[in-house]
Length: 66
Image 1: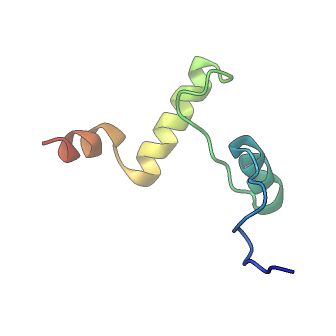
Image 2: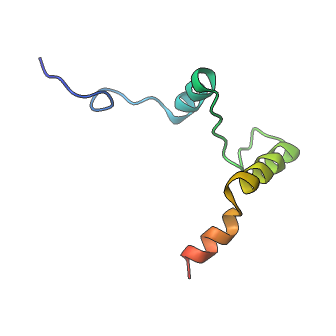
């Protein structure tokens, strides 16, 4: 019998399942800012929250491409 640490080998959960489990078990929400399931106001709210908590995404991307 082979032993492997958790996370190695076996099957991986789909990303959406990981997000769903994270929300249900830990209260952590992972949302793509352009998720098409959201309305424009919902996407805008996500963008504003992300910028408030973590800074402007566009400035960081421009700085890494210089």
